[in-house]
Length: 107
Image: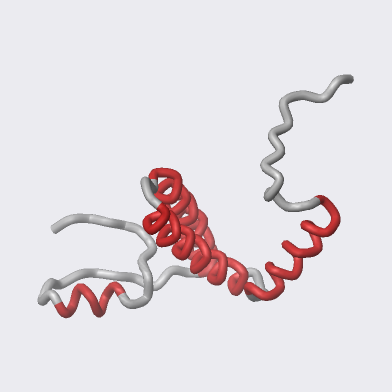
């Protein structure tokens, strides 16, 4: 039996059940849930960085966005508040659309 020991989407147990396989799960306490969400972000970010085409990249970005929804909720907020903060920061400091790469700053 393969061992995964990782946070999975809510529908994964149903998917496994439909294959006729057995499995074990547990429900994480808050601190462990946050820790596992953060680990999952790194996993999905790595998968995004390894994507070789636009379709796969979008798929991985969708996974990252799902994690952002969960993280916002666990921090007592929601994605609309995250978006509001993002917009505020973009207004003050800009976004990343101009592709500016800072090489150095003279002292």
